[in-house]
Amino acid sequence: MSEKLQKVLARAGLGSRRQIERWIEEGRITIDNTPATLGARVTPDQTLRVDKRIIPTHALESKHRVLIYHKPEGEVCTRSDPQGRATVFDKLPTLRGARWIVIGRLDFNTSGLLLFTTDGELANRLMHPSYEIEREYAVRILGKVSAEMLARLKEGVMLEDGPARFDVVTEAGGAGANHWYHVVLKEGRNREVRRLWEAVGVKVSRLIRIRYGAISLPPHFHARRFIEADEATMKDLYQSAGLNLPASAPKLARRETRKSHETNKSTRRPPDGKGRSKRQPAFERNSTGARTTRGARRP
Image (cartoon, rainbow, N blue to C red; front, side):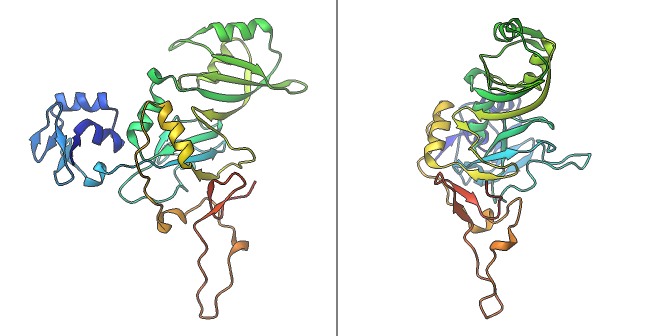
């Protein structure tokens, strides 16, 4: 079966369909050593190249895995860091013939919900401003916030890269000098939440993302822990991006899922008498029924 070239390459995480259409017009993509044209369709037995680099045939396979990760402060959202800092990719399950794509980065000092997927088209849609996917944050403010400040944040303030505002601002408690608010916005510019509060003269002392689109950070879900989204959650996420969930999800190989951020040695079984340890299942169920990696900290 054939598929449109730009759809295949977008799904492989190389860029959005619009970007790939520009690459085709610029002559950067070839099919069997022939320059690609807009509207071209490809099959798994053809050789695709982008800037003379071969794209493996697994790019034609439908991939739709999503991981829900609780990012701690002190990790960066890049695959490698020149300063040697920990990255959010360090302990993710190993993949063959695919790669994890981060959806909506968080800065070094921000914690909370981070999504990863193997579906490039899904990632591009969830991050593109035109789809207006909501991001919700819990924000701890140091200092007093007036009703006038809250009104300005909802009406809009001018930042260095253009106007910005919160769609929703609600109080969430607190005592003393610190007070919590929940805020919702529909774009993900760099440090936008912090810059909005700074624009009205207050400082953010802690920032946690608690929701991205249809997915919320699970309760009692400790930092550095990840779980795989179930089919119902995946369906909601795809619908919010204007996509249909592919017919079937690939099964997780044991080899791919045994890698976890922590190893709980106390749960290992003793050798079985033949000098070999009995293997544990790669996943276990949490209280909500979702699968979670064995060895990750329990809430």
